[in-house]
Length: 310
Image (cartoon, rainbow, N blue to C red):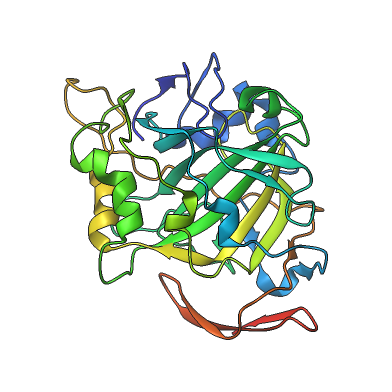
């Protein structure tokens, strides 16, 4: 990004109202106005599969959890990302999956410039084209904004995105259609989807293998209030769809002099410090996973909870 924005409703991880400015062009300065950004449990991180500890108590995410569509869905350009706010989103109430009852509030995207990679988390040092975050808040708190600063307030499900699919992803196309229709391309523009749809429609087929750690929001105010779940299998989109994110979402208001595409809206990885990354023991057999710069085969045995990546 090439400019700072007054934070009216800027924290796209939380939707909270803040009274300061921040920019992806000057990430080292975040901690000046937001001290939590200098904490020792910050996100994102580099997930190293061989270092992750298998946790047999972690349950199996199933697509049925995400099957219920919300009451309404508002897609908007925040000046930092494309975000979809959910009214009465699904609830996850399974202690083997998340440490509390968590309600889905919104999802948003991170990506890079054309011909680059822009996921926030890395996997074994490698970066995907982008990343989708579904943000949930603990229902012991009244809303997302209140929960954001509480140590047990948030749960974010992270999905890598690969731009190697040979055809358009029809579920993702539904999400970005307002961009194609020139409805939400500029800062503060928003639109309501005429028909809601469930999160299940755009998730990967295999959501059994995932990594878990305690971390933070990946943008100011960087509260260390997030239990992170990062899935190994990516959402695959076409190069055309990736190009829409890269070239049709602008950080400036409509009518401003010039247009500045939102690119590189990701934070570099942070030190793991003393934290432990755990991983699920579930898997669905042998499968191939694509990364932007390499190809690997994941072999796992649920009996011993072993996942080997090579």
